[in-house]
Amino acid sequence: MAKGVWIVAEQRDGALRKVSFELASTARKLADQLGEEVGAVLCGSGVEAMAAELAKYGVDKVYVADNAALEPYTTDAHATAVAKIVKENDPAILFIGASAQGKDLSASLVGKLATGMATDCTDVKVADGKLLAVRPMYAGKCFGEVVIDAFPQMASLRPNVFPIVECAKAGEVVKFDAGLGEAKTKVAEILKEAAGKIDVAEANIIVSGGRGMKGPEGYGILEDLAGLLGAAVGASRAAVDAGWRPQADQVGQTGKVVSPNLYIACGISGAIQHLAGMSSSKYIVAINKDAEAPIFARADYGIVDDLFKVVPALTQEVKKLLA
Amino acid sequence: MNIVACVKQVPDTEAQIKVKGDGSGIEEGGIKWVMNPYDEFGVEEAMKLKEKLGGEVTIVSVGPARTMETIRTALAMGAEKGIQIDDPALYNADAYATAEALAAAIKGVPYDIVFCGQRAIDDDSAQVGSILAELLGIPQVTFVTKLEIDGTAVKATRPIEGAAVVVATSLPCVITATKGLNEPRYASLPGIMKAKKKPVDIKKAADIGVTGASKSKVAKFTPPPARPPGKVLCADDTPEGKAAELAKLLREEAKVI
Image (cartoon, rainbow over the protein chains, first blue to last red):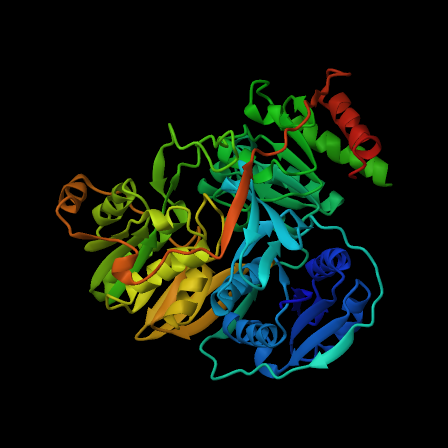
């Protein structure tokens, strides 16, 4: 009988990523309801020391595969290692972060483990001893409650949504052999972006611009405000298709679906496919000249005015508050 | 080169999605159906590869009768032939069952490379391409924005948070396409005319030896939580005054800055 709530911890460049603690805290909560243990799988090279950090957030056992071939991440090697240890231990539930790496790894694991997964969940709970995973579908135009009739019941959790709760446990380290064969894929090169850039999918605050920014140079005022707030700069499809902003910054049904604490939409009218991608943000601010723009129907706070005057003034106000 | 591109028919991005009263699914009436935008990038890349290296493109899709229209769109873009897996057992299939059906159909044709979209914009699962690669026992690269093929050597670029990773692998493989890979072409009028005569094989689940059984299901669909009505800030009529009011509310009421 499958037992235990497991997570796949995500680390990059020698550090655990924040989503790993979100996964651990969530797994702890569900494991306590089920009266079961939390296990974490940690793969990489020289990663054993990170096990103690996972223990702080409620992990009972950390299964560590330490192997040079697991660094940097490849789908092939990591999915092989995680599938092996999961098959040996038969956990009931397996959580992974719905990050770029987690989305890639989790989908491959679904194939290897012949199970089902709820992708990019915003809530998970236990009902009748089984996992019930709530996730946005159609980019958030509706939600689905997913049940899985195979083990492990897998869910990838949207980063930045689940709270991190400290809860110290033993974090006993169990080393395992990754069981890697000949590598079918390898990383040829990693092209790093400018340091300090925050991805919209991971940001607590997003300052986003649309067609109303009038051109790529208009984004300077959004960069200033974002810099001050530690925010990411997002963009609408119109702005990305016009070539004003990189594709990675696009928010919406054909871009990234985001749920930050604060989403500031500047010069975005609110096409349905954009609204779908950001409506689960905790607070939404809309700044737009057109009082009839659909974005105002979703906004907690709306300003009908020229964004080129409002945004720099807002930056000044925020500066005063943070001083 | 034998190229396969998987496509799914989905509601247009402008479509309003209404949940059925009993929560069993969405209302399909009045929806405009289109090819999944991410699959379009896959089909376009398939065309570009064929134009460069020669060969044939086969379109594979799982879906009900209306899906034929999307297969014909891909044929009008230049693909040679299609396979449609149309079986009620697969109408609400999850990612695993869908991938299983695609894999079974693809095993029946020669293939050097298989394209999928990185996700379908209806269920947003982002799983099918990866499961398909596992079931075919070939490597995969997902969320690809740039693809280079030299002989059997493959280099594919995928963005991750704050970086892009160039992955090296070899054919045959599965590539899941995302925005940035290319600009999908529009079907030409002669292309549309020709597409009507191109062969499309329609198969049932049993024909390809799958049951269509899913591992997971959506037990209930719900509309998104309603947002309370917002405030339009107008305590002061100047941009500066509105900005000051907003900063105050974000700090004191919302407590987000």
